[in-house]
Amino acid sequence: MSEEVISTDAVIVGAGPCGLFAIFELGLLDIKCHVVDILDRPGGQCAELYPEKPIYDIPALPIVTGSELTHRLLDQAKPFKPEYHFNQMVTELTKREDGRFELKTDGGLVFNAKVVVIAAGGGSFQPKKPPIPGIEAYEAKSVFYSVKKMETLRGRDILIVGGGDSALDWTLNLQPLARSLTLLHRRDDFRAAPDSVKKMRELVAAGKMQFKLGQVTGLTGEGGVLASVQVKGNEGPFDITANAMLPFFGLTMKLGPVAEWGLNLHENLIPVDTAKFETSTPGIFAIGDINTYPGKLKLILSGFHEAALMAQEAFHHIHPGERLLFQYTTSSSSLQKKLGVA
Ligand SMILES: Cc1cc2nc3c(=O)[nH]c(=O)nc-3n(C[C@H](O)[C@H](O)[C@H](O)COP(=O)(O)OP(=O)(O)OC[C@H]3O[C@@H](n4cnc5c(N)ncnc54)[C@H](O)[C@@H]3O)c2cc1C
Image 1: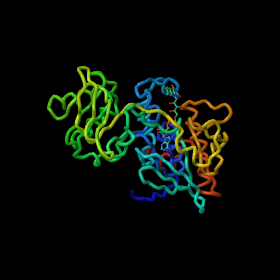
Image 2: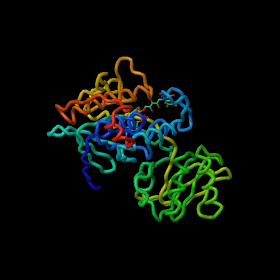
Image 3: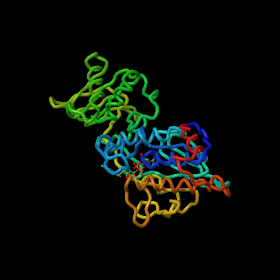
Image 4: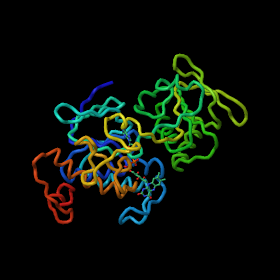
């Protein structure tokens, strides 16, 4: 695994709505951000749990879906050229002797940052594992719950299991590089975007992949290398030849590695003060659903406010002794220049 060290002002852990808005608030103060998320896309709960549900309490947006809010936040952050690292879980966070912070991800990235903003929401989304006997023996070699590098699946006989967006998106993305690809789902009815389902059916009709109905009951192989998968179908059992299986059965939320970073915790949340939203370690901030303080409301708008105040204090960590002028975006030509609208 390569150890690429990325030096930056701020690392934001979590690309949920609060992490995304933090890019904007930090950007206004010239603070450059890298943003890391376990998921393969931005938006946190909004994107993962309710992309098509309308939200009614975002100020000045009387109705907006989780997915649209995410896109608007990404657009708003764009002028500050944030760098996103998806499919990466921040596993380690330590304070260096020079006062900066080192963060490591499970994908081998290493960051060296002046400040850290934990916007990890309810914690890390972790895959729900299917109840297949002995599946652990195949994990990471033949069974994958996410795709970190598509190339590792090139030329393989791939079985994708599930009927949601992840299952369908990966079916379409991996089909061109697979030797063979089968999609297996319990029923001929999908929770995924209709356009993805249509494209999958076109590939089946063109003979480029297979779609089967049924549930996985067992795995056969040796030394963690899968050879075939046993399936209980509506009309009896059958086998599918596969040396890579990707089950997409949804996600659950667990606090995850945040608990091991030496921060004070209260009932799995990070206590912060309400002036700076700083944790028990100066230079590490916590905003959004992951933090707690008297009167906390787990609402997106609370996280937006927290991001604005956090950025002010982060500025003082990054530029000690420098005065920070309070400015409005409506009237400050310097802020407008940063936003690219001057
Ligand atoms: C069904 C539902 C409906 C809701 N409706 C509303 C509503 O109408 N109005 C409202 O204001 N709020 C609503 N909420 C709550 C709202 O979604 C949350 O308050 C909001 O998502 C919190 O944003 P966040 O950025 O703090 O965290 P999240 O959205 O949880 O994002 C956190 C991100 O951090 C990532 N992460 C965690 N740990 C790590 C790690 N170690 N390394 C890398 N990444 C990590 C996660 O993968 C995740 O993407 C609703 C929630 C649900 C479930």
